[in-house]
Image 1 (cartoon, helix red, strand yellow):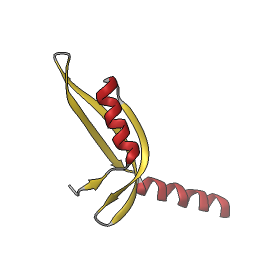
Image 2 (tube, rainbow, N blue to C red):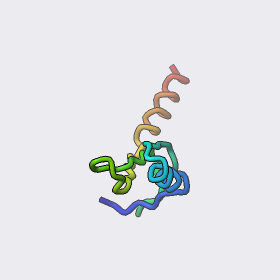
Image 3 (cartoon, one colour):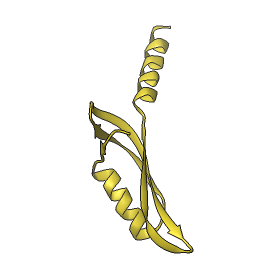
Image 4 (cartoon, rainbow, N blue to C red):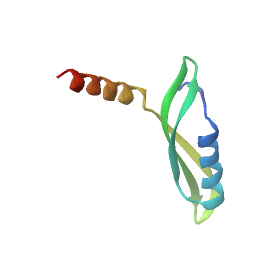
Length: 79
């Protein structure tokens, strides 16, 4: 997997998941080797036997979905 640099929104969601022990999610542009990409993220607290161990940040690249949506909108505008 490529290294991803998360922005302030994702970092805030991760801190919030640790502080509140609740799942947080959002969208942001993030950085990867080849440049920026649109991402959806979810910060998930990790517990074992009721004890908070940490949190995980799951990131999904939404660039392709956004491009398909844009193409769909353009097609509908022409049709």
